[in-house]
Image 1 (cartoon, rainbow, N blue to C red):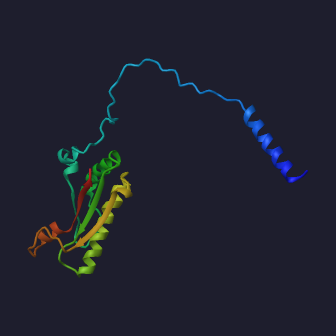
Image 2 (cartoon, helix red, strand yellow):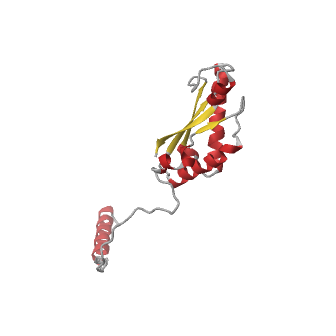
Image 3 (spheres, rainbow, N blue to C red):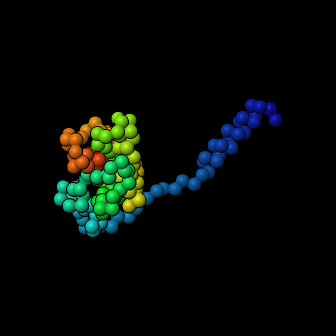
Length: 169
């Protein structure tokens, strides 16, 4: 067969295939009369909402204190970690910054590292309680942002901390 004849034969077969194809008419789905309902956001009983950050005593505890030269969480802050982790689970859009701090003793670099280790300790505790790592950011300020400037043990104890700051509720 010659090339023009082949082209003509293929064109004829394609036209026949299109003409013979069965056309299905789509019908819209049958509508049944329904009564209008108002949609309410799905809330789980016991789930935290943004207003709870200011009203719930457990969530209002946003400063975690550490012992001298330590980056491990003290037992009295475990309940606060569970509350904040539950809030993060209940509110996937929530975001927090964990700001690690140290007292004035030690070098600047050491205190920056210690503040970061403390922030990571809080982050690990939140994750162990079900909080998402993607919702957390750790920042270290070391000794740069003290809450107290006196040089005594009481003041130093208040500066050894991690502050939980909600950047999105």
